[in-house]
Length: 115
Image (cartoon, one colour):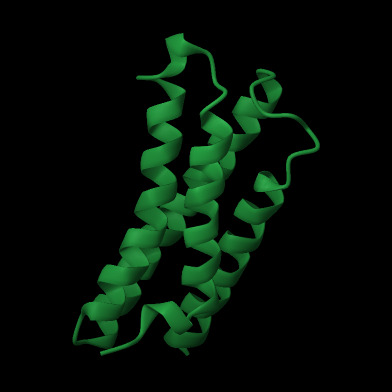
């Protein structure tokens, strides 16, 4: 079994989930069951799928869950971009850069494992 806590991809995804929860606290109340919930689910899904993949016994399963995590991280990236354009997240927020870094690291890990 792999230790997910030692993976840079997990550390970034975990921090992304924390930051998404923090920035969405200030979203308008009417977004509680809309964009707020979608953003939180996607961010938590990215970290959770890394954890689940690390718990799998085969390399193929591991990569499969990393692929899902990557998709969720990209989803978070879009949702953060949308929230910024809607004025819910300040353009100066570092959370979008964190989401970009998370997807890059995840993509690199997946590519390395596929070689």
